[in-house]
Amino acid sequence: MRTTVKAPGVARGPKRAFLAPVWLLAILALLAVFAVGSALLALWDATARGGATVIVLRHAEKSAEPVSDPPLSVEGIARAARLANLLGGAQAQGRPAAIFISDTRRSAETAAPLAARLGLAPQVIAKGEPVATARRVLADQPHGTSVVIGHANTLPLLVSELTRGRFTVPADESTYDAIYVINRPAIGPASLVVLRY
Image 1 (cartoon, rainbow, N blue to C red):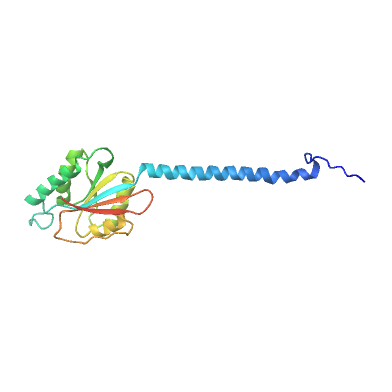
Image 2: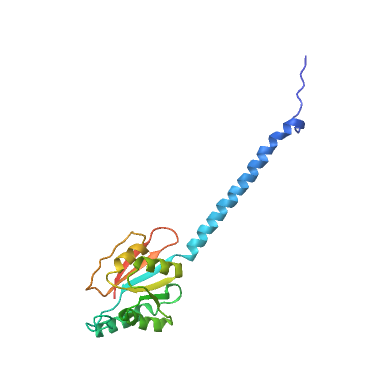
């Protein structure tokens, strides 16, 4: 007896249901590719925009009198001018877009030459609120460069908050020349560079 082999044909009838899961898998794979592509585009966009750079420093040297809200001393006025020369010439991406100061005369006078050079009005923040200050700076300038002029007793907590707890700095009443440059990238940990001026 001879057996004849027939060429396979297209399934008809009840066997056709087998192809439905293949199409469903193809649609799910297409959706997965779209989701991964969207996530990669969002990641690229966040990286391209960059993060925030916050320049934190203490006000310049102050006079001994009056005790309640002293102005800058002669040395402090010279330091404020150096700060304006240092940061006021920055162009394009590194140029400070905002200046935040405490509600004291010494902070305002430290910021004045820089603010004039950049054409910015300093934003006044509460003196004893470093955590709130950090949050406000990042909310107001999430992708640009900001300058924050604070006080010896607020700088440690401010730097810690801005670096997500990665770095701490000393609360030193005798130091006026330190500049803490904090870079908070869109992706990855914050970094800190300490400069002297």
